[in-house]
Image 1: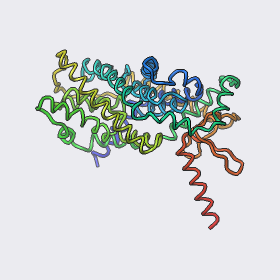
Image 2: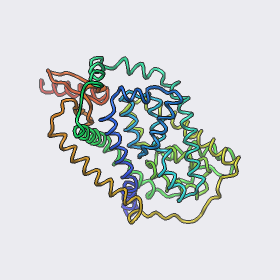
Image 3: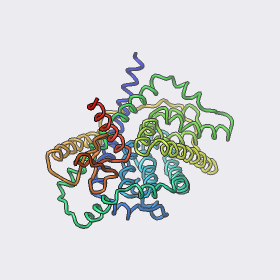
Image 4: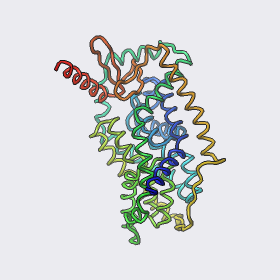
Length: 409
């Protein structure tokens, strides 16, 4: 029981350490959805040419966020008309090419890991740019074919005509932010609880036994393959996986294995469930396999580069310390984020009481959507319903049909 309590406490501190990044990511996602039109997003990231991939990477770096929020943000810009490959590159950059992650790595493990983060991140982006268009070549065509022409026409008409006040845009951004949170709240709760339990309840010897050591290249190869699997089952998110990565390094895991583990925050099990909700089961499985391959190969290449440069550090054996609450950057940023959360909720409640005919709420997941470019819509008995994705529309139609059949019986 003591271990369970310790695990729940650890899960809370993981949430505390990533709260500010999580909130900022969701707020940025809400702002993009409210302020950037589909036409504008197409102009910024509407393809996967090298210049577009560079922009997507840059935007990802400057909008760094927790992996949960990054997945929501990537999904939102994809819905806005961005190319799928560019959206995924944006997601990887916003979690793996970020300054705060580099700082934590530098002070907790060493500067070599901070440098490897950016070098390996660039390798991952290159691999994604090469692989995703090959495996998802029909994705853009299917999206265009399934789009509602009337909604697209309305969106194009409003891009240059409709004028919205600044306050209305702020309320809309708050609505999108709360909508993203409401849709992902259970995945977040489950993720942090299981992460804490995985670290505290299971003995560390269990984690160490998963990795092969003392066999040169074959140890590295096994480590970079198993590292992302460990990240998946340990449920660790973004910067929160650095303490466990440091522990693995001190236990003798190879440099490339640790790097692959750090990169694999985007395939933790809660995120795989989110991908399934966003893109469907088949596409989520294909994405997971590609992400796993890219993370493993990037870890392998990064270790090869650092080995050639003789820059791999010695394994440390000093105990780790992890100060959470106090006069530090995390506490200050969390305090700012808490104030921001209050403002978001205030404007969200204003949005509920105000009249803005261009926005609606998905009746299935709770996300706010713009009527003029909603991914799916349905008119039932003269009432229009709008949805964040086709699967939500289908779920709602099935729900209405079930309720109707039940009332008849």
